Image 1: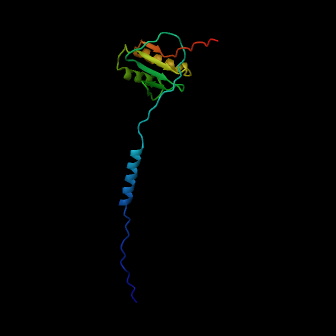
Image 2: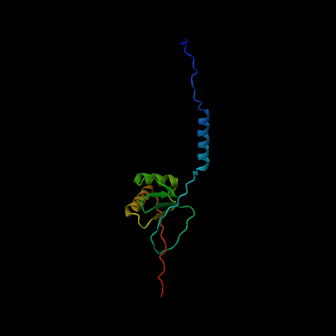
Image 3: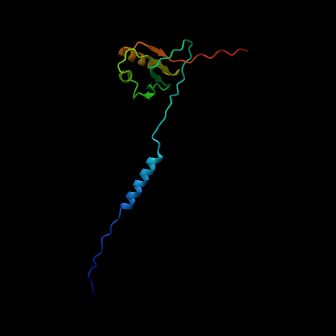
Length: 141
C-alpha cells in the first residue's frame, strides 16, 4: 500500500480579466454620463409699472420662491447675511458703482429681500433696482 500524499498544486484565481471588465465598465459609464447640468431659475416677478432701464454690466441677485439666493445665476450656499455679503463683494469685484438688480419671486419673503438690501448697503452699493413685470392691460369688452 502506498500512503504517500501527492503534492497538489495550489489553486490561483486570476483576477486580471475581472479587473479588465471593471475598467471597461468604468469607461463606458464615464462616456455615457453627461456632466453638464443646465439649470434655469423659475422666478415669477411681481407686477409694477415704471420705466425700463438697461445697463451694460449689472450684478443680478435672484431670490426664488423657496428663498434661495442666486448671484448672476449661481446659487449661494446659504442665506445668511455674511454669506450674501461675501458673495456680492466677490461678484462685484469691489466696484462701488456697479448697478445691482434684485429679481425676487413674488412669493419670496420680505426678509430675504431685506437681507440682500442690508448686505448691499453694508458694502456701499447704492445703485439698486428691482425687476418686475409690467401689469397686463385690462381686457376691454
